[in-house]
Length: 581
Length: 30
Image (cartoon, rainbow over all chains, first blue to last red; front, side, top):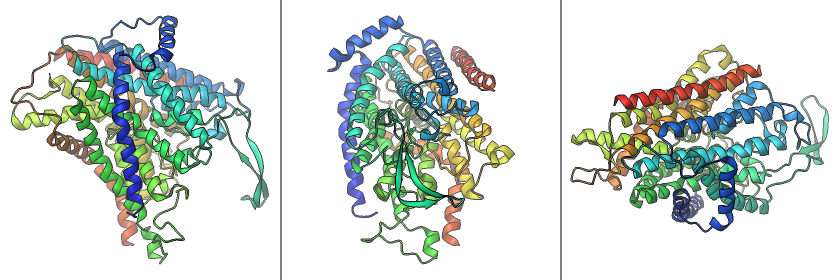
């Protein structure tokens, strides 16, 4: 790693960790209904909203009622986003007169934004009107993020409460998460991004003369270029804060009007991990033992930092294929060295690798460089981070409840080792919790591996794999890893906008989202009904370095055992081929 | 075509309500 790389990474992590306590403490207050400094501004709107929608904020839900509320709300979201896309040609705010989206792509995109995945089988500026971007996609960025956080809070209540059947009110959690957390943070970030040059306008696209005319593939002279604009800043702010990741423009945060400067890059990078990291503190605060939250955060960092180092070193090392050709790839005053293919020169290798690792550690999926152009090992890291289940920070809410599933497995395994009934945060972990935690971990794994297998053995799947050999397999594996774990980033290269991939990836996104949420809510209900057990001599402390090591080991072993064979067929064999030929 | 894709989406959510019921029955057995 270069000398200026380390301080950049250290500064990023330093700022991020400094924000964890204040934001985490604020979110705990927001979800507990305690007074916050925004009550005067937001409180009247919140009460008005409850009255308008007929929500009784004191009403409580069982885990089944909470689950059905999540599902029915998400179904309504899916139908709305689908309808807006299909009717796009008739709706306003469409200065480029973009036509309706095809049914299969509308399905895929509606599922993608409802599940907080933001997999994009389309190019934003050439496909979606301003109306669709704002009222379908951006709205879903808020709502799907708030839904993930609501499910996490319900799980936390399961640990907090005892001898009760209820875990909170989904509608109240949605409203408070959106009004008190996501909207204020998004407003601040959007204004900051506009100050850096991110566009925010309803004006139509600009036709500008090229400084240097060129020719197209047919030899026709090209003298002008169309510059796409639009209400981008407001969408980009929540796309990062809500770990959504869907870009306003096709090139996502590599686009100069979506991420123009090093400062906008830093702000967006911080926004990607901000809420997932701070939620660890919220968890500790709400269960009454902050050390529990710090322990979970430490486990996340213990996996994140080494993988960040591997990806950065892999990209800063020379490309082995070019090295065989005798190309000088060492850093110097005239070149950054390493693998710069697919990376923006204004960000460089360190900030591209950091983004790639952060966006796949969180289930964000936005990109500021093209992951398909990474070295095999550099590309393996983001892919494996997704395959670990998006629990290393993960999506807002979903990352932490996923990590808590691994924590339940970890205490169960340690209980087996010492022959005692496992318990976590004062709750006995029984057979039902273990079954639910196993389902929550295995559903996404199954979707990734089965989906990839179906794609590579079927003619429809193989028809749009344009890269033959292991790299083509990596592209398919990456696509299903991204969809099945609700990340949304892509290796590109794969022609995914076909009815086959739109349908199968859509199913992977749905299963990866909701069939994880439901076992989590079932655990929440089961734990809430249990009595709290006092700490005894046989209790495994879950705030100690020993537990952090145990938790990290469980996450890595499950991830390695599940995906090593598939990775061996893709990036690992590609790396070996490149280095030995 | 719209009907097929919409029905597919609706079927998933309805089926997921069935999963809630199934998980509830597992807990009742426990």
